[in-house]
Amino acid sequence: MNEKMNQTKNVEIATLGGGCFWCLEPIFAHLQGVQDAVVGYAGGKTVSPSYEQVCTGMTGHAEVVQVTFDPNIISYREILEVFFSVHDPTTRNRQGADVGTQYRSSILVHSEAQRETAERLIQELNQKGIWQNPVVTEVVPFTVFYKAEEYHQEYFEKNLYAGYCQMVIQPKVSKFRKQFAQRLK
Image 1 (tube, rainbow, N blue to C red):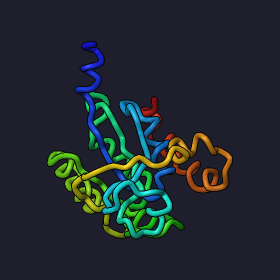
Image 2: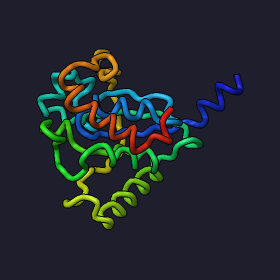
Image 3: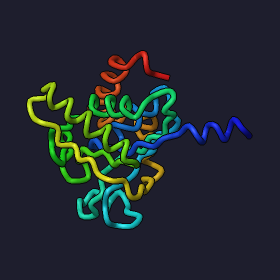
Image 4: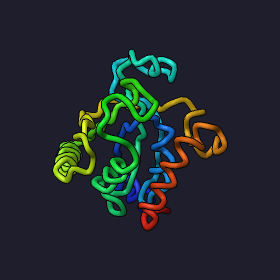
């Protein structure tokens, strides 16, 4: 029982939107210290939206991954460093061919400490000039997370040979695995 209590105690949550949630989930699911990565919707006004509703862009939600992690193994800053390395944070409301507010780059913070960390990292990234354009990732307070339909969960692993998985997700996962090999489970 104490072990279970300690596991619960050493948990933090990061909620991140970086385009299609199918691309983010397989990356965070394989990081050391990450206990769970669940895709869903956050940052909007519609209660319990469906995927079809979110896709219209009218609900205000972003496709997000909610990452449950142990901060004693991986820090929130390290989670954000991975996040910024696997999507383009300089394009507003789009990632590649995916266009719409549901694909915006966003960090939904769960605490003041998370907000400070996110804003400080964005400032550092902009100062380093890593990208040609400035980071436009929004940093907003987390309100509510709606888990996406079951067929979206672990989509990449369930559909490895689908065209989108091969053409879009696989290159991102491969780049991540190479760049963060020492951090993989």
